[in-house]
Image (tube, rainbow, N blue to C red; front, side, top):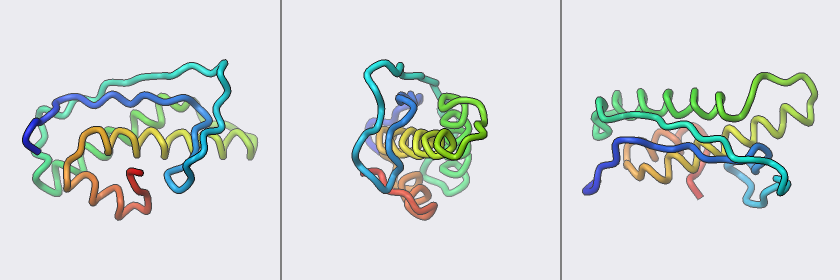
Length: 110
């Protein structure tokens, strides 16, 4: 990556679609939550660096998409939110090893 970025902001609105679907389900009343994930300490050219960042992004997505829920409908929306947030963050960072790891997990970056 020629223009290395050291922070990734995960911006999302709860209720967005999963990495497999492309149509948003969010209402206008929902607000976006953002977390900054630092990764200046990681070498994204290595599998270990990419894996460490992917875990940070995954945890941040869980945080911004809310606490665990009980209803099936809410759980589905929360899962979609997490996947969308993670996909958007991976796409924004644009590192080959991170993108490959994300694809291997069963998602795409769009």
